[in-house]
Image (cartoon, rainbow, N blue to C red):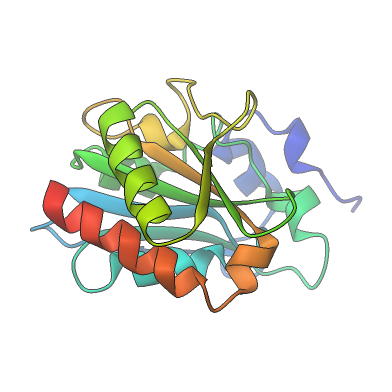
Length: 193
């Protein structure tokens, strides 16, 4: 069978018709009913390195989390990177339907240790950006194409229709300084909850 590319998929149903759960990818979901916040990594595992770890650490014991993780030996990004505005996996949507705050962790190819913030929740995005800058991290508004303003973007599929998307450079995802990011984001989410 020839490899199918995620860029050609219109929905999660298309992806799951080609790739097999618990062989090619896995879904990890921790629902904490007392939490109105979800932290998600829709391109975790081998798709965008370290995003699962960062999402799990931001969630800690306080917030719900969802991870979609690529398990292929190679080519996870090309095969499994379903665009965020097409990411409609049922258990993720169900989790988000009960959440007021959604934070999505992604990786980007920009240089240096940088955070690019997007999403339709301007108030939470601003609070997180301020907290990240206070922690000494470089934080900028995401450019067009990474700004997560599409209403169908998975970060905007919570109860309020507005969430926050992080695009983290590989340098930051691999750096010990990512702990500063995790603490800064957790502190804002704890205040917002």
